[in-house]
Length: 476
Image: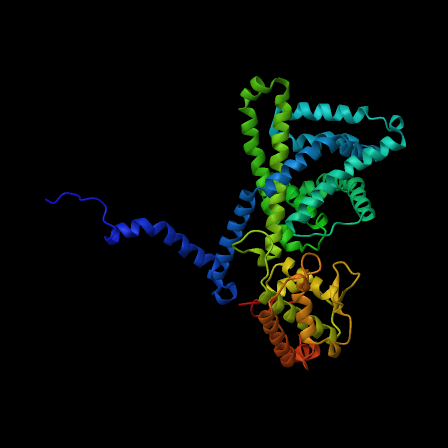
């Protein structure tokens, strides 16, 4: 029998074992990221979209931005928790339901077990010891600012997830935040009171005497915590970001976040019950450590649900590379021509102006890419932004007075003044002549072509149609 003579690179099996992981990775990447969803059959497109969804969410978690912002929110929460609850306590006390604040705080800290009861007792003591008359006007203003700063920090984190650069104004922030902080507790406990009143009604009690209704009531009571948390998460996802969030994606994010939060509460309760070593290591600080860990996990789940809602509403961000897209010159020109044609066509038909989100969804490109191109056209005086929320875009001049060549020049020259203009670059004479010939050729080919010509060549939109996804993406 012939003995083994070592690895042989020429053997097919050895070559397969050596390159199999890389080949599998390339095959997987090609199957997930290499195809356009519009070109795939229904079930396969749904499966590929789901795999992209999971991979992008895992990449965001591994990237560290969500965890970093969750830790920042933990620090802000520790500073603003007592002022925030004191503000809610004062409102509830005026309506005679302030005694409901402690059970709600106990419910949130239930995963901490006995330590949660201790934290609740101390927080309530801090709140009861606050004397607004002693604070004075400056102290009261600082109290309100500290309470509002938490909601502001949450908005900044949500705007980051939703790729929103514009923050709300100071006046709008205080009006929205204070209305949520003052009216929110009243609505919550009013809903609880109405529910208790309805369940105690004689008609409802008679229905509960039947076995079927009794079973349904038991199931409703069992899953009510999930429903309340999902509803709260959904409300936050719609209310907080400085952009228009559709109810469907927000509900999906609330569903994922609510289920994760309730499930994490059970797991953390087991962890807190078995973490006797923390008391030996941290002594009296063990309660604070566990409290901070639970806060961190809660904020991380809330931000993760916001990411789920974002990708559900903007599937154009389900791409292989993280971060905002870097447009090539060709893509920038192509996107400018298509976006300007759609805006001009909608303007001719007298429809509602296109928004960034509608264009991004229709063209299936990230919103930031659309914003870059529209900002260049706005800076060149070709487009103007409306005062609506969200803003729309309209042509500044008559469409037959806007040439295609100046439009392309505006997109090509965008950003040059900030860093390096074309005139600052020393160019040899042969290169300068070549550039001049290219400009002359482009000008000759596009001299008589206007934006109105482009818009007139597009098919008319259906009556009442909003921005619907087009048949194919730009660059496809």
